[in-house]
Image 1 (cartoon, rainbow, N blue to C red):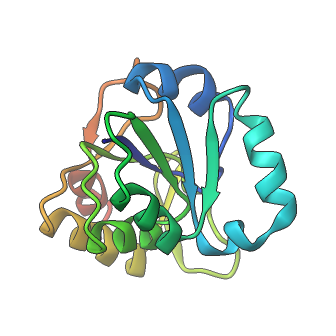
Image 2: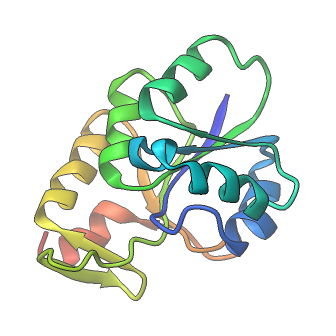
Length: 161
């Protein structure tokens, strides 16, 4: 069961390991991104950053295959690096219980707008977020489990997207 999907281009960091894993009760953390999965250094370092949490670094297709093989009652948290990764996973049939837009640092050279102090969005990203919502997945933004979640589509709409 995918208890939580977080879209966060920082991937594994303190907020994930010290707060989110416990809050969602995940026993497995999957980092899902094709480029990261091809990078031997990140494949080695990211599980170390998870501080003892069982971690897999997989491509989008390998993530789908792993989940579809039957992860049983295992509670899984997926870290999607970009909104496009989250959309690809959802379009492939994965059904996370919640989708949280975490941190999205600005990507140099893109036309982004900061919609919160930690989330940069381009018009292409906004389209992807709306596609995810239109597929029936309610998007929230919630930095920490102790923060109140906000409806993400309302946030981006209020910023002109």
